Image 1 (cartoon, helix red, strand yellow):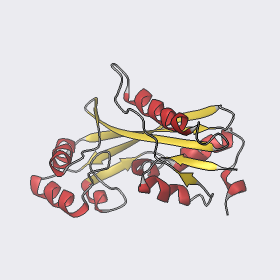
Image 2 (tube, one colour):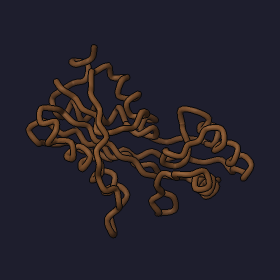
Image 3 (cartoon, one colour):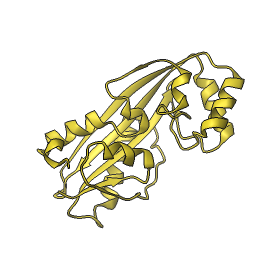
Length: 194
């Protein structure tokens, strides 16, 4: 089996390595602009599928994994912050709030069939001060992370509690969901693990 992760994210690569299945990776180039009136769930599933499809011409014999994530606060899609000021503003807006994280996942077979899902996860933020948020952003630089935090690092200190079936979805690749899709496609992960 040839497996390709349609992502340049080092976080997703690290997670996929846990399944001990050899894989290649490549970052697809797609337009990630939300469509008008598109729900957050539809948005992330569409992008996951588009990422997989974008690499199909170059990798016709591969099983391709596409994944995309967004956060939703008060009904509004929040992207990656990109800079420290935006990260601070995102975290201050999330203070004392519950933020929904949605991760779209797509497994596309070499013959074109695909399986998709949307993995939800809720993060309940503590009441945070501007000083706490600024210090966190300074220390961890979560500028390329949806929600402006790294749950695998100091980001965990920002939360009261977490709700969902797979904490890996907060990092960008829900491994339980991926296992579900692989099983549905008739390729149980343990069969390919090394």
